[in-house]
Length: 555
Image 1 (tube, helix red, strand yellow):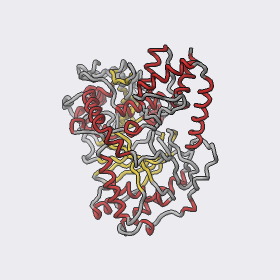
Image 2 (image 1 turned 90 degrees about the vertical axis):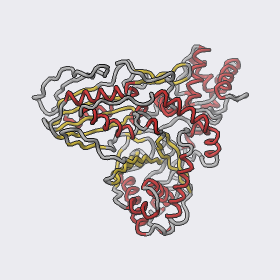
Image 3 (image 1 turned 60 degrees about the vertical axis):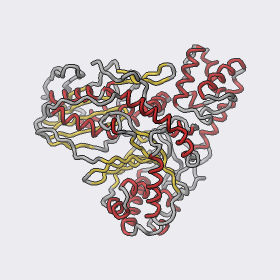
């Protein structure tokens, strides 16, 4: 299928660029896989459902796109391989063979296979689809699989890379799937994805100075975190596990009483809990939607992670209202990536050890004619971006919440303790929202390790990584004996960063560098020195000396 991604603009969005860099550095992987599963009960028309999937790809060509670097910029281009749209019959050995599905003119002709999955069962096939890696360069970045579990029971699973998909995209895809399955033609989007990316970058450029002024006094890249059962925090993607969290109606009741949203109450409660664990200054990264009126119907990545920082004090009601005011202040710069505003932040999967994604679903589940459909809106991909991530989906039926955690640094029992503490705190707030924070039920600090508990140089601790980087930079400076090479690299850095002078041991990120800076440096080194730099050098030794050493080794 030939798709039109662009209208005079094919540069990837800022969020896509940052994610591409993170993936190229080997720090992403499964954590960026976004699964969506829908169970259908009833007489499902397989051909119609697969054709509906193709129609969705036709309306949202970003699902058929890949990312490519060109001249120091990451660009969004149509993939050579379309997203696979497959059918698997795992109901038993009597599964029949299905031929290729006929799809509407101009739509993706999906690969349709009928494989007997009786031996491994549907859960094995679903898990295999989630764990199968994506390649941002070669694609495809989305996969549709329709599983037949029984004659009248099917599961449709979509797994997409986060670079082309976000939480709101789940609602959009399901709504369009239901319409297409019901026989409705899907309308064209008002603007292309490329036009939306261009408009976003124009707004970010206009707001960059204001964002820098806003974040400068707020942001301190302090990676310390006190949690029960956790001796050290993590900011790296890792295999994860989940603990379901029953929030009940407490958040809704408190929100109504205080004139706040449920999100504001939950976020204030999480800040209060972390403060109770001994964290005097609390920073929690929050996923914020960057959708506009023009992009509300677009599938894609329209999210920016930004920190909400607080020092809880006063009554809970007072503190929760202060969180609301802080959020409103943050919203003014919601489209500006923190690394672009300040610099000094290396590419990684999370800004802080604790993060939150909160999505509000205002509508009901989509209706598929003749079928009962149930959706798992919080499907887990088996990985976590940091130490602890709270995922909440709000719908007219209430809150669905779960904690994702890194079992290498936080035990299941400890995570269950955090979940119980948060629920207890919300119950206390529901009974006494005007109570001082110090009087609300909070965990005893004796169960929380001190900041000195992690041994020096323990894996994942901030001091160890900083020391290693500094040591590597020093070694690199001594290893490069060619001053001409150092001068060439320094000149490239000055061009990219817009500065007049750089020392060999200056850190790229301390100088205000970010993901775009990395791709531009790599492109200039490639063009002028015929050397392809690895992305890893910008993790290990992000200095002029470190880059020069790698160039010397490569020649």
